[in-house]
Length: 371
Image (tube, rainbow, N blue to C red):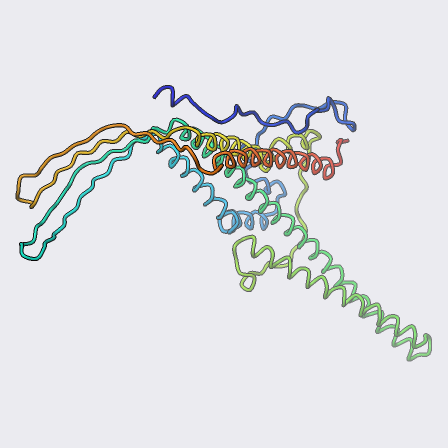
């Protein structure tokens, strides 16, 4: 038992490097530090740094009512439950079988038989229980990172949509005042035309300016409606029943320290999730290798049988081990092992690509190196 509990057929795991040769420095920056992942660090209500009470209320609604966040939370609970499912393989199973039958043949009276007992079975999963348990833990950690990524994605999308809507509100107010000014200009130009001071072309030009501004205002109103509908979906509400009053852009921009881009890279949950998926694939290799080993089980039964509930029962018991080894499956075991290795290599490539995309996003959005 001690030998089986310590045996893990999965390859020794370490997070794969992003590239075969890691640079000593960036070409844009003289020095850099080795990343220390902090994707589990609590971010808190970061949107409150903008100081907008309407945005704060919308973010709280999104955290509690957004359906994508709800799906990610349910997946996380499911993944954590799978850890308990995998842990159950280390424990024996106990059942209580019971039956009662009444039968007979022509020429004789019916007979009643019953049986009741206790049965215990313990499959000594030396080879596959530990990889399955480790894979379940890694999958739960990856799902936790996915949940954090979904929450952050929804929160960021909501904040961006809200600010875009407030910018349109400012533009809407500007165009309203512009249209009012153009309307006065049209009135004045018509009066000047009636007095013979300008031509009809000048009147048409003034009217065209007003019509162009009105058309642009209609486009702004359409864009605002689309953004308002997007905010409704993000906060788990029907667009037909949601409206957001026009307002001004009162948010203050938080101070961004120069060292923030590298810290953001360390806190990206998508990178953490990709790395944990590599660990899951690594344990899948151990599960595929387990098919080469026999399955061992230890069973025990205690059974009482009789011809009636009132009669003295016949007690029987049995206990003993059993083993089974698959000798031929048409190449299935070999193919599953190759598939597991291919899945591992695919996850490694996916992890490296995620890291490269993260580096690209940091350098592009924050104009690396920081000033």
